Length: 138
Image (cartoon, rainbow, N blue to C red; front, side, top):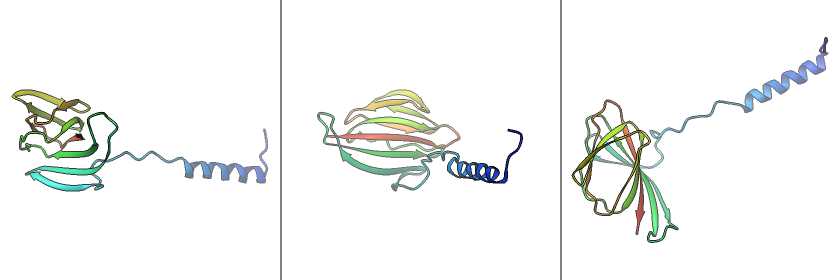
């Protein structure tokens, strides 16, 4: 193809422009966006509740999701768990004391808690830590 006539050039330009309009960089999901109800639990500790729905897991009636957002230097209360739950660190790192045993949960670490389990979280780092919790309610 040595020559490109005006009509072909305009069609090619239109195709390129349309493609550029459709193809845009994927926006990253941010957990800082306010999409749920925020409650301050302790200094530097905020709970963001997202919602609840029915569960099909035997022994559980419903499931809910929430984040615990912990600023550097903050700690949680250490109360017993109201429900069984699955916890996941989505950002940062937390030191946890669960039933007297200490472990460190880094980003993408997942663990569970049974109803009545005592656990306290500490953000010893210098960045915000986010623990996503899926509550399994009987």
